[in-house]
Amino acid sequence: MKQKKVLILGANPETTSLVLKAKEMGLYTIVTDYNPNAYAKAFADQAININAIDVDALISFAKKEKVDAVLVGVAEALLPAYYEICKGLNMPAYSDLETFEIMGRKDYFKQKCREFNVPTIREYERDNVTFPVVIKPVDSCSSKGIRICYTEEELTPAIDYALSFSKSGKYLIEEYMTGDEVISYYVMQDGNPIFVGMCDRYTYKQKDLVQLPTSYIYPSRHIDSYMKNTDPGVKEMIKGLHLNNGSIFFQCFVDQDGIVRIYEPGYRLNGAQEHLIISRVSGIDAKELYINYALNGKVSDQDLAPLANPKPSQISCKLSPLVRLGEISELQGLDEIQKLPDVVSVNPSYRNGEIVEGEGTLKQIVCRFFIVSETKDDLVNTIRKIDELFHVLDQDGNDMIIGRFDPQIIYELY
Image (cartoon, rainbow, N blue to C red; front, side, top):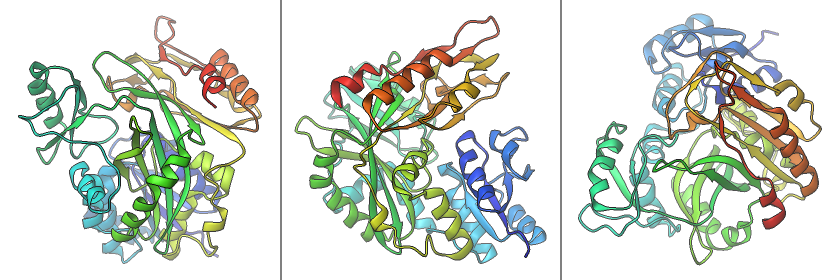
């Protein structure tokens, strides 16, 4: 029987787990990216250098190579090209251009939240602002183009900065939320939205830049409030927007009354790779769902709803230590950390010799460690062992890590 071929669009580090899952499922993986040295290419059976938005070239390639299915990694900017390529090859795409546009535009999405009575975050007009506020482009991701403003004088430079990252030339002014950050996760099967998990997001503050995550803890301390006040509207919105298959995550803040307010979606695999934890505690693996759909037009032959386990007995964590900008000489401790009993996966974002750029963006995340533990003691001990083993050295032998999560928080809050 011929080994089926799958073409994966994009090769950033976060796409690596999708490549590995496809190989684990017995598929021949072809990864394309304009960058010859893109990270995920090293894990594929075949790597090509066609730009992932070059629709005509990739359709031609796929026909010539008799590709059986097309997948997109975690890059939101590739979703329109993904749809067009699937359409040109008469292959299943999990959604359409109009829906991808709505889900990729913060302003469009928040309007849908209001239509379906989903709690969201207050916005301001330029001439009627109550400080502090957050300025962001409506159509960017990975924390790009975002600034916090405390005074009128800071607004114009922040708006100009946001616009420099916006293809549509538009921005939002939102209330600066100081409450806890959470992320909720769903998978969709034949029109049925299934709530599969929720985590608390802990961050590190850098000057006036957006706060970047150092840890995600599952399950969230706010999950009961979310399931009561936010989840019903979210499920109606998912149905109303006809998000019939795939996965979606929602970034949220908790307001002073404990209400979880959504401000941004991701209708794709999440770069934070929460699927590595959710698949361990529930058996629902979003990567596998996307691969199944690409091959068969169906995420699963099994009813997924009974597998959902958003409040598992285990306590889990995704660690994402941050580094300052500069050239990495050596990542230390990865092999030893992978052997720790509670560590599910170790996913570095860089190789030795690569340069960290993009201050105030997710590019400062140097590695992601996924941990599933039975007890708080086990989790805290594993985090402390990782901190002991993991170091990122620059060319002068100095440690580049600037932001780590304090595991004492687990004892205090969970």
